[in-house]
Length: 241
Image (cartoon, rainbow, N blue to C red; front, side, top):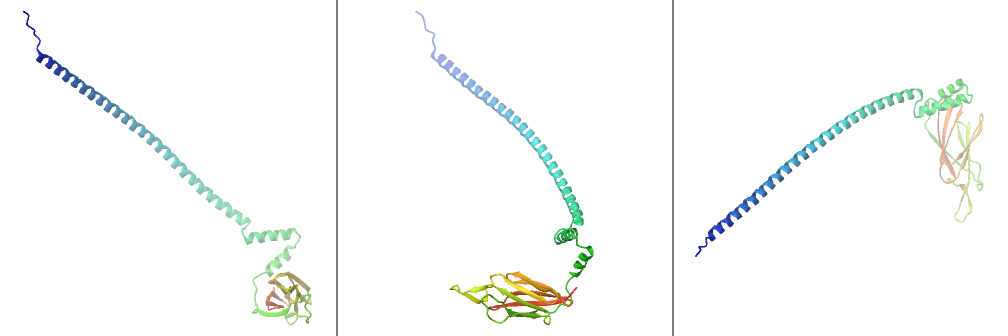
């Protein structure tokens, strides 16, 4: 009779050892995988850091180049502005701006049209600021119209040396009838009559300005609308020339 040597405790022990080995193997695999992952991540981070540092260095180099370009452009702009001011000053010395430029152009045109330099010089000197001027005075007179049937009306200035008259267009009533008084919105015709110069006529809407030289004095007139039918003339006189 044969005796069976099978021992169940040995089988259980072998299974436990096998499970333990499997667990240890699994732990080793997981640990190795984690180590490899950590190492790969560290390598990636290092490479990323190196790449970022290179990009920062490149951008810093570009920034420095741009700053240098901006500085150079600012210096060039400042130099250009300085040169522009110099050229402008040189130009103004030859051809001034504003009223002086207009006057210079006007003088050139007058000389090119044949005006004698002596005559032009006299005219310019005669245009000095007025002196010995009187206080303004005011007179009024009726403006004649096609419908006006009254007596002639005028303003006498400088002891009768200057006579001022005016003609205008008739005003119309609401029903379209022409009135005796003038329409101040329409053109008027002002006549300045002197013994020496004859009659000078100015046309336009009020106010109308004019000047006349009589007896060594310049009379300056402003004719404007007065009361109904009337024109008002304000004038003074200054020494001439």
